[in-house]
Image (cartoon, rainbow, N blue to C red; front, side):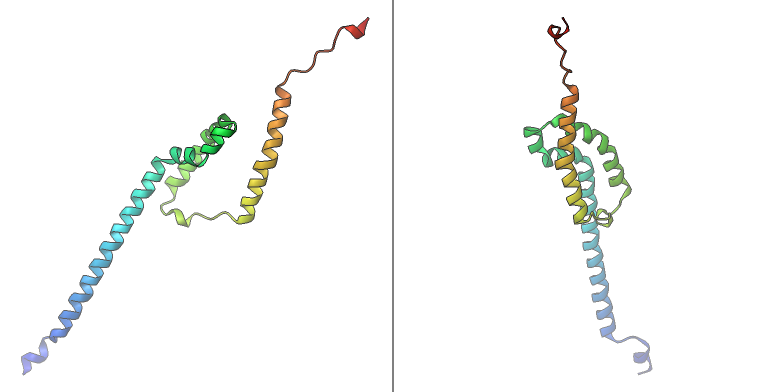
Length: 134
């Protein structure tokens, strides 16, 4: 009877084994999802140009595409730096809805106005006629 008190009961090993297997299973599932996440982030980094083309394809058809492509060449290195610097994209600060509205308003109104001004400035000034100088 003295030897029976020294060893833990049989149920302890069963519980310990079940808990250990549960933690191994959970860590395997977490590892799988983390690997899937990092792979998708690498694909996002590699396909950032095609994502831009996909989002703005309507603009390329109906508007001045060269202006958008030029702006993308300016912004692209900044976007790639942000993607490289952030390990977990959901931790990036979000942009408030009022900021989205303000940006969209500026893009719709101000950019249109500036384009109209640029078109007017590109047109040659009218040459005065020589008939009125006699």
